[in-house]
Length: 246
Ligand SMILES: Nc1nonc1C(=O)NCC1CCCCC1
Image: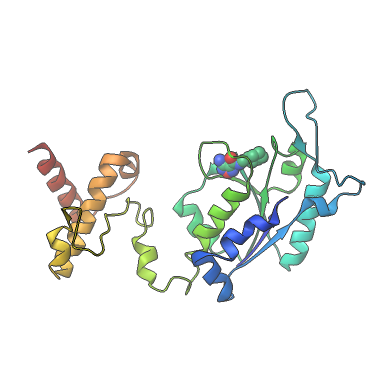
């Protein structure tokens, strides 16, 4: 999968190309990430990429022309059709469902804005979709772009050693993740739950599912609203709620 990221700070992309699971995807040839700097598509001496907002107000707005030319270059490098996604708080929320759908795109261009935003005409002319990673304001779209790349990279076939760990990740089955423990068995007087030491795989599976259901109902009841529970999940959640009120 190929990503062209339109950014004033291409070196930031090292965070996904040189470290962690996404860097493994790059090494395996399953992921490519190219930074394309709009400043390289300016035609004035000062390589201007922004200007003051019409109508007044604080800050600066990114000029449309360098962005459009950078997107055109990205599409050329993509070597085929590529959707353009603009990362901004005005976008639709990035969810695991959306991530899973994006995995089937062969090429994507991600537009990372800076300053107060980008000229609206650039959005009208080249942006296919706006995506938000959350309801807060960052200083640029690069980190959101890398969040999207990381979330997609983990799902590329053969990237994660144990396919299961992707399956067990939170939000993959619509529940929050269960607690995890490793050595030592007792840390600062706190012991690992007995069931995890029992070697009973079926009991461990049920315990983990119950913990995931309990956590989700406590911390993110909204996720349970849209989720159909299996018979077993209903039973475990009822069990948890009875134990809680006992
Ligand atoms: N939240 C977000 N989700 O996706 N992007 C986000 C963001 O906060 N982006 C920063 C702004 C900064 C000014 C230009 C446009 C992007």
